[in-house]
Amino acid sequence: MIFEYQLSAKREDFYDITAQVSEAVAKSDVQDGAAVVYCPHTTAGITINEDADPDVVRDLLFALSKTYPDRPEFRHMEGNSAAHLKASVIGSSVTVIIRGGRLLLGTWQGIYFCEFDPPRSRKYYVKILRA
Ligand code: ZN
Image (cartoon, rainbow, N blue to C red):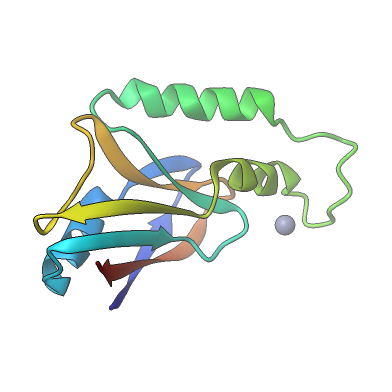
């Protein structure tokens, strides 16, 4: 069972998609399995991190931009190599265990769609696997 979601990413940010992924799990009625959350873009990614303190995401964005700044040596003619680099570092998917019909996330964990080359109309997929 696969679900497709749209996202309007207006700025470089981490967009919390935990509620949408939980909704896909509920619609699937799968009790034991896994949810694969996948981003089909080359300048965006998917990750899991803290969703309690918004300063965590702020610090991650700050550190990613400091670590992977745009550089004059980059050759890619679209001019967004820093965004491609951040997307590869973050990765394009996560897998979360489903137990008892719910995502087996830690207390402080949320699932994020990570936009690195805004503004963009994006999509992501949630594939629900039955164990
Ligand atoms: Zn590019």
